[in-house]
Image 1 (cartoon, rainbow, N blue to C red):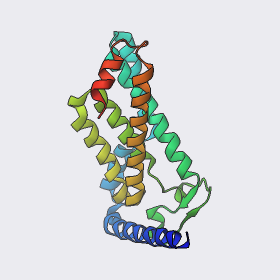
Image 2: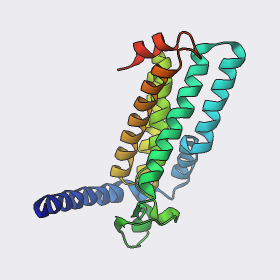
Image 3: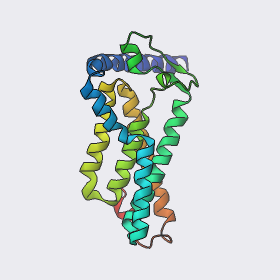
Image 4: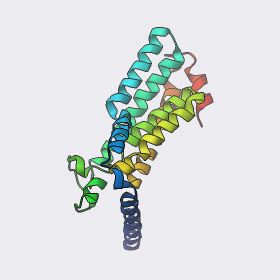
Length: 209
């Protein structure tokens, strides 16, 4: 067990070293007008806009009698909810300073903790978790829209690095959380929506990858 802990600690140190290096290489333009504008656009991947997207899509689908559109809205809401719950579970148990704190001359640390301060909540990236979950939910029902959905999600995730809001590992773990959350919701909907939406089972079965 001591050897396992020592190896894990060594690997974690390597990841953090890489994270800090990438942050220094990408965060130099974080205070420019351009990056601030891009950052505001990327905030469309924050919780309120994505929840609004899911709710609006569901309502429009139900109003138009469009099962596919309504299912998409349900997938967005459920996948985003699960991704947000999962990232919050992790985030509230790990205190990690944001890159901008380090880049502005502050100290860096990553440790167990329950701080609610924004500057201490770098890990994992909630923007990325939510964006990836929603993108996969859309692509699940509308495969032809997958390039646009994934492109938007990856862009929202990638910009977190030059913004200095997240480290590389924050973004990667956030992406994994979003991916897993949508996959879990897809399985659940496949098993439980056949009565609500007659064509749901066929569509879900065809889209599971």
